[in-house]
Image (cartoon, rainbow, N blue to C red):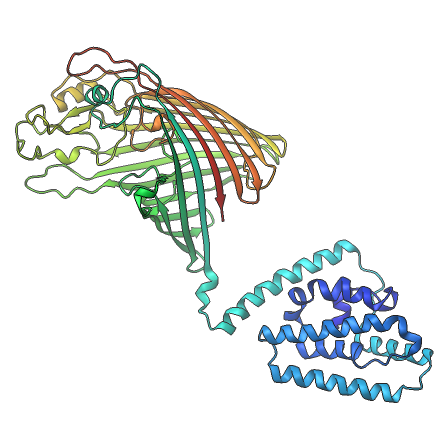
Length: 578
C-alpha cells in the first residue's frame, strides 16, 4: 500500500491544508508506527516529491508556509533515520541533495505556470503517490493504528538488538521488583509479663514484652524471569532481610547498621508441560491457595510442586497441587540421631465462576510435617556443650506460641534446648467468595480453618517424658474486604477487617504471619486496614493489629499463671512495584 494513503486513510484533496497533514499525522506518530512496514527510500522519495519537488507560485502562497514546515519535518525525519541506524549518513545526504536538485529543475520548468497548472502539478504528484479512500471510520483507524504499532514495536526491538550486537536472550528477560517503606509502632500494654518470665514459661528468647517500640523499616526486592523456551521459564530474586529469618524481609533502618543484608529468596525452574500441568522446583513462591493463617506472605518454599488445573465445565475449573519441601537438612551420624525435617503437602479444590464478575473458590489441603517434633536426649547429654543425639530436633527457627520442652530434661542447667512438643499434621479448609456485582467495587469474603490432627497427648508424654500440654489444635480466620481487588492505579481503594484465632499447637509458629502478634501462635485478635492507590504501581497501606495471648503458661520458678501477653501493632506502608 502507498505510504500517503497508509498514513492518513483519506483523500488528500479533502484535507483542509498541508499544514493539517504535517501537524496531525506526520508529526504525531510517524516514526513509531510506519517505518518497519515501508521501504525507507520510497517514504523519503514520496515526501521529497511533495515537499521539495512540487512547484509553488504566488497563487499558492497560502500553502507555502505549510510546505516549508513539511520540508523541515522531512529533513528532521532523515536525520532521525541516520541516528537510528536505518540510513547511513552518506545515503541520507545524497537523497536530500537529489531532492533539492529535482526541486530546482521543477521550478525552472514551471516558472511561468498559472495557478491552475500549479494545482494540476500538485494533484498529479498526489495521484501518483496514493490510492484514494473516500472514508475510513475512526474506530477502524484506531484499531489499525494499534495493530501496526504493536507489530512495529516488536520488529524494532528485534532490530535494535541486532544493530547493537546483543544476544537474542536479552529479549527473553523480564525484570521485576518492589520497594516498601514502613513506619511501624509496636505497643505493649501495662500488665504484660516480663521477658524473663515469658521466656522461661514458653521456651523462647524474646528481648522485649513491655516497652513500646517505634521504627522505620524497608523492604527491597529485585528479580528477573527468563523465558528459556516455549514451555520452560526460570527466575531468581534478591531481597533484604535477616538471613536466618524465613518470614520477614524487612530491614530496620538505622545508620549504625551500616549496609543492608541482601539474600536470594527465589531461584527456580518452572515447566508448563501441558496447559493443565505445571511443575516448579527450587525456591519459589507459595504454590497453595491459602491465607496468612498458615503461611506468611513472604515465606519462600524450597522443593518441588506440581499443579493440575483440569476444566470440568466452562464455569468450573478444578485444581490439585502436590509437593515435597525440605525444611531443615540434618546429617545423621553416630553422635547425631536426628532426621532431616520435611513437609509433604497436597491440596484439591474448585474455582467456580458463577457470572462474569463473581466467583467462588474452595480447597482442602493436608500438610504433613515430618520429624519436626523434639526428642529427648535422655541422660546422653554432653554437660560441656549441652548437646546430645537428638539436639538437632530443636527447630532452627521459631517465634513463639507452640508448646515446647527441654530436650536435655534439665540435665544441663543453663544449656536448655527447646524442641516442639507436638507433631504437626494440619488439615486446612480455605474458601473465598468474590462478589463483583458492583464492579469495580468488590465484596470479598474469606474463611480459613485449620486443625492439627497430629496432636496426641499420650504420644507426647511418652516421647518427652513429661506431662503433655493441653490440646490447643484449632485455628481459624474470617475476613471481609470491600473495594477494588487491587490498588495499582490512582484512586483505587479497599478496606478490610478480620478476626483471627491461632491456638498454641495448631500451626508451626515459625511459618505463620509475622505481623499479627509479631509472629507466632497462642493468640487471638483483630485486624483492620485499607489500601489506597496514589498513582500507577504506587499505593498506601494502613493496618492495625490487636492480639492477646489465649492460654498463658505458668513459670517454672513459681508456678504462678502469668498475665496474657498482649501486643498491638500499627503499620503505615508506602508501596511501589515495577
